[in-house]
Length: 343
Image (cartoon, rainbow, N blue to C red; front, side, top):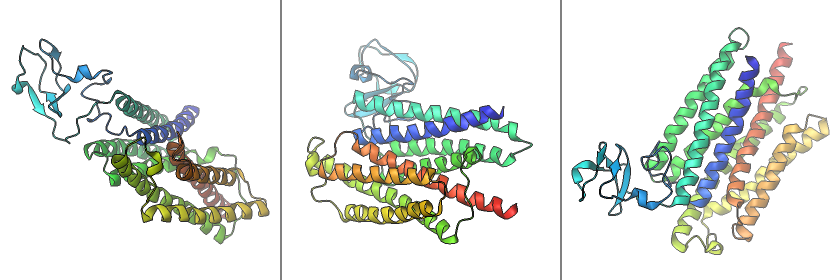
């Protein structure tokens, strides 16, 4: 049973990162409101592929909860019924969560796939938690962490709903992203004992620098969401095709975000050099530096090459991978030191 627990823990981590990838694609394509309701999509478990399905039609069967777009507003069927030759208001109720009523088939299906991957990730964490009971006599704390992950996934789903209901309020998007990273951290805690990485005694300053480096990454991610908010605003002003204008006159937070990356590089570069000099395991440190290098390249591409295709989601996904490597490194160092002190 234990091997199934480990399998689903690893699968959960992979799927959570796929959710982050899907969310980044949603953000890149502006598909966040592709499904204006939650958890269904226009009232369907499988969303429509044609705008005609969302129009009222005479002599058509409608199911309770189905959504139509009428007079640039959303209306929800109150019950199962077959429409007559004329529209009957009493069969419909206005959708009151927000006033966004646009159907774009590509946006709808991109957002739907994002939700589908999220549901699969939630299912994987549930199986992980169920199989965690096999550790009752040996690692009871992992049972607790596993169920915390399940509830965290439920909370994350609720956050996703609030993002939709707020019509993509920036603060809620940032919280949604940070919650995803928290779930990644919890899964790494669960998987820690399955890594073949062992450190000797490390100095207090090394621990401080590793923790500081991870804190800088989290700050960069938060600032990056603010820059992304500015870019979204520019897209609304100048259009999706005028990529050369998106960062023509950036706000001050862009310059802070860009300059801050130098500090991130220097701190983590020192950690990498220190590890290499002292002969420490380089597995996670190399991952950190690879992510930072690629992160800087995608940032340069977005600014100087006018947002080439895929650069935006790659930038976000690399930031989340960077956090994962840093957190794994931090876990390994602190847990190894604890083991050395008790041995």
